[in-house]
Image (cartoon, rainbow, N blue to C red; front, top):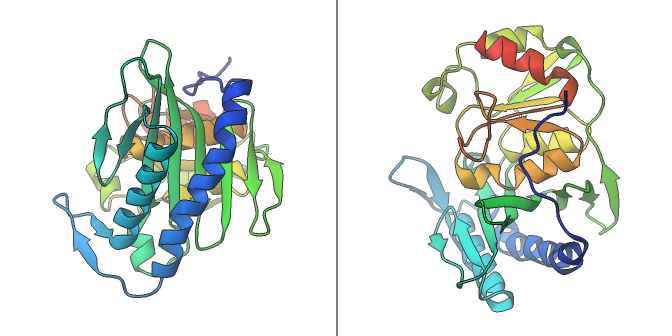
Length: 278
């Protein structure tokens, strides 16, 4: 059975145009975030009780400025500053999560990252064609699309990456963002997560966007996030699919329509869904 893909194909002309610009955006975000990490920058609680810092807001401001200067007709959706509509006839939208894992950032944990997606509308709504997971503290990033995924290292070198083979959950390393029945895990219907964790070879809370980075680079096998926002999902879909993995929502459908993620290799997807929902 062929897994459903939720990202759209990136054309050759689009790759030539937008891949270098994605690297440029990664640099823009890092230049704002890196100097603020582990400096005790002020933390503000938003209306939903989630934290935000000047790293989040400053990075998104600079990303928006760079996109608007290069592609003034493109639409933008960002976690901190909302939606900018595109010009009539425009097909592209950038989706920005400048600091995914702000709680990690403010506790001096290196696992936070920047998520950037480029989406295209082909007449049936936006679908991501290009995504990146960048880790400013480690100076590494993965950029993915339907044609593959590549890791860029601190020295600027790049290499292709792919999810490692895993045919049984009992051989898998499973990651999640927080402990079961706490926080966002408790808010969702997550009573069956324990069944997955007990079956797995190893389970850790190395989550937020780092969990998906670990999958894409062959370091882990399953990542579970039962409750997300759209800007959390859009960049991850092309990265995981480009690295040979599969993604669904928490109930097995489109993770973009119902923002949540079960990410894994195709061989264990059915077992995961059965354990989580049987």
